[in-house]
Length: 191
Figure 1 (tube, rainbow, N blue to C red):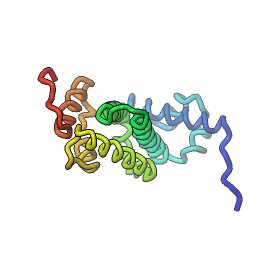
Figure 2 (cartoon, rainbow, N blue to C red):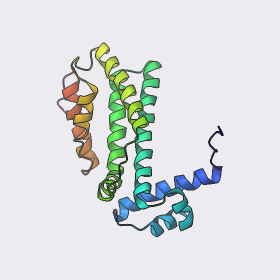
Figure 3 (cartoon, rainbow, N blue to C red):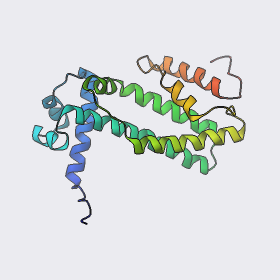
Figure 4 (cartoon, helix red, strand yellow):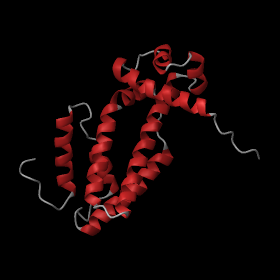
């Protein structure tokens, strides 16, 4: 069996430029933005865009897949820092802050995915995230910072309520309230 062909470096760069431009253009102009406009913003020919993504649904799915892979990478990096001695609660808090902000930035793309009927689930990335977040939760429970009955499902349930359509101060306040339900420490009165 022939091993899969490794993409050329310029093809990888072009694909990344297209994904970045799609994210930006959809955020600026909504899901109706044309493939021609996305190609122009990426600085590539329309044919190059279509070679990577035959239609807009595939393009939006690619953008969401990159987001999910980024979340998985963030979670795994938090576990690595945990292994180097950082506190589980600090890593959970930092992870959630970064993911909420990334979700706010990609909110328009997720809306486009729904409008186009895209199914952007990247099972491998979701599995990586679940595995890493489970390690963080268990470490936080072992430290006594996270309630012993908290599960990964609780995080996903409440995370799905993040106010990604609201300004950053509202998102920060939401995170404080969110964490107070999961942690054993009292909430700071100033927050």
